Amino acid sequence: MRALTLLVAYLAPYCLIASTAQSPSVQSYNDQAAKLCRKARDSGDGALYQKAEEAVQHSLRLAPGNYDTQKLEVSVMIGKHEFAQALKLASELNARTHDDIAGWGLLVDANVALGNYDAAEQAAQWILDLRPGSSLGFEKAAILRSIWGDQEGSAEFFDEAYRRTSQNDVDQRAWLLTQNARVQFEAGNLKRAEELLDEALKLAPDSQLAATVLTKVKASK
Image 1 (cartoon, one colour):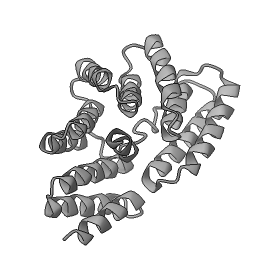
Image 2 (cartoon, one colour; image 1 turned 30 degrees about the vertical axis):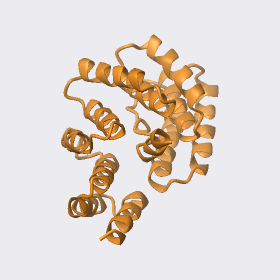
Image 3 (cartoon, one colour; image 1 turned 90 degrees about the horizontal axis):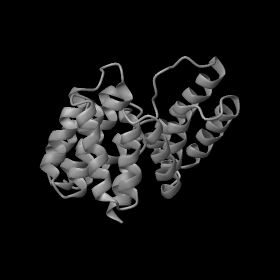
């Protein structure tokens, strides 16, 4: 049960994908799905994943088998708690493009959700091996550390992921600060948790997730 709770908290890190050489219509549907996933991640509104799925299906009808679209499809499946299907598709995509760290990240999330912690750890290690300085590798390591009860290690990895995330990616930076705050809150470090959440809300004043966690932190004082 803890794994599922953590997965929901850390959900959908892959919903912002880089533009690639594909038709404007496919890219626009992918962008729409990505935005909806991020909004769902922040708001906790599961209905947004259904809308994201509709955008993904529109994109796939235009370009069947499109790799970037199918990665988004995995993110949507995870958001809808279709974990077995997500793992199957993520594994197929990973076999197609073995050196894509985003694909490995999807394998981390799907395996965590299913309780396959050894497989999740191996996937996270692949990210760090393929791209040692990537924010994604530290983010996934932070999630696994938290699952294992190492809140101090998790906080350190979230700090590192935040430092390595582009300053232009405001939503992701705010999300990482909020996840770090969750870890600090679980460890009883209420002051540090509040500081992180204040910083997150400065970056993303409309973040529902950060505001919700901040309310819990203040209520525990």
